[in-house]
Amino acid sequence: MTTFYYRFDKVLNLREQERDETEMAYKEAIEEFEKIATQLYDQMKKKENILEEQQQRMTTGFSIDDLHSYSRFINTLDLSIDHIQQEVMKSRSKMNWYESQLLEKNIEVKKFEKVKEIGKQQHNVEMEHVEINRIDELSTMKFRSREDRW
Image 1 (cartoon, helix red, strand yellow):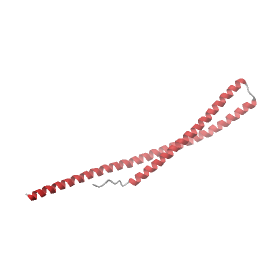
Image 2: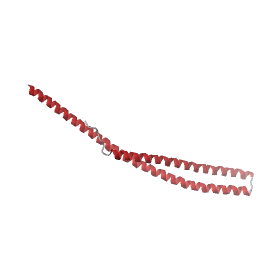
Image 3: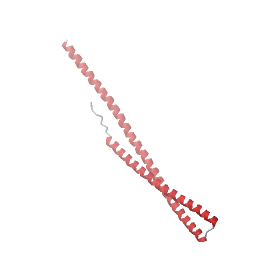
Image 4: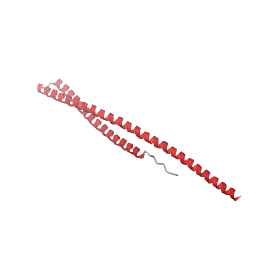
């Protein structure tokens, strides 16, 4: 009985390797997105705390210089938040692109695996048929050798 040889085995291995590399890149993109999103959250939280502090100080009263200082700091935070929001959008876009690439690679690998499985099943059916023919031939030869003895 011969062993099954899948003629596209090297292509399947290549596709699996590409899929694994894409999966690694996707995971890195997720990590990058989470890092940048955390920075955005921290900056927004910082702004919220500063605004609360400013409100509290306004009730007790504080100088114009302090008011200008808070205002400049809040403007700086707003610019930082806008910049980080742009980075979050880029990072999300990159993450979504890698996700779609990973989906495509998975589909390709599944196709090759399905073709391989079908080929293996056909090979097994052929081998069973060959084995049955051999058994038939052996039994026919054995029967003929008995007939010759009589």
